[in-house]
Image (cartoon, rainbow, N blue to C red; front, side, top):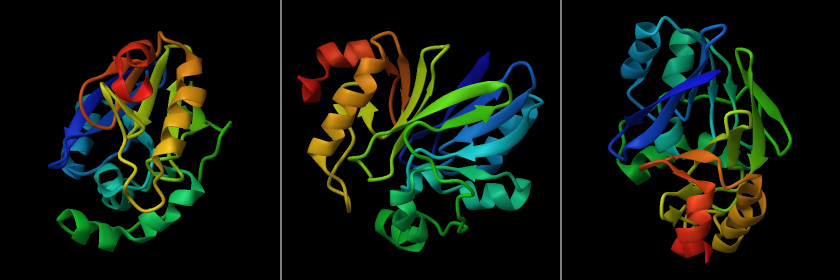
Length: 210
């Protein structure tokens, strides 16, 4: 089983997910945007072993603690897609743009693309490329448990912004409608901000998808 808790971090209340395999106690952090020591404490308190950092996209509020976590734990960084490299290479500019404290630079060890899989212990997550918010944005889906980590693609009642560099609203809506929603109404998703929802609820009620 893939266990999980949501840890909102940064002034943007970004939903960092701590996920772990119940068989092995190996864990990953999905989108560690900040508050490094709090994230490490959550891992330690549960007796887990951090084995990787998984990134859905390159925005600062989702990746800000990554460099510091790598410096302290030496775990690999997986994701996002290669088209988000310019966001990660420009972390200093993002710090100035968003008014954050300086962060430690990093480079992903593996870029992700449509059709890839990533592992957390014995558990597998499927990778779906969902551009529009950022060009290299990916979504991670645990198909057996009908669970998705969607970053800033889709929210409870909303969709991601597309007014950042290389964002595009039509591309974003296309990714949601043609890539995510066909995966099934019963999938629960953890968004980058705010409360969880299901693909089915958003298909019926999200005003941006009608």
